[in-house]
Each structure stands twice: as structure tokens, then as C-alpha cells.
Image (cartoon, rainbow, N blue to C red):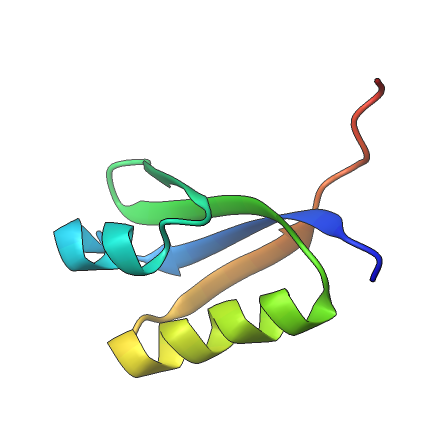
Length: 70
């Protein structure tokens, strides 16, 4: 399945539990929000949305990043 690199921003910190839940993604705090970055296919992207819902996190922004040049 086709994958894309996504940058998902959620409101506030995710804490240690969130870092474990999103262990398949790069997790970065920017002081106010948390940014999740990873290569995801459509099913995996919806899986991340499900995890956000379960944790009660607010989605602030979703963007698909440009492909990296190899």
C-alpha cells in the first residue's frame, strides 16, 4: 500500500503514556503542542486517528510532507 510522510499536530503534551502509544512515530514537543511524524499508509493513518480519540487528544493540524529525495 502507498505510504506518505505525515506531520500530525495535537494540542498539549502527550506524556509518557502517549509516547508509548505513538512509539511507531517520531514524537516532538514544541512547548505548546506535540508533533507526531511518520510514514503511514491510509490504514495506519486512520489507526493514528483512533489512538488520538482513545487518548482524548485534540487534532490541531494534519499535513502530508513532501517526498524526500534519495
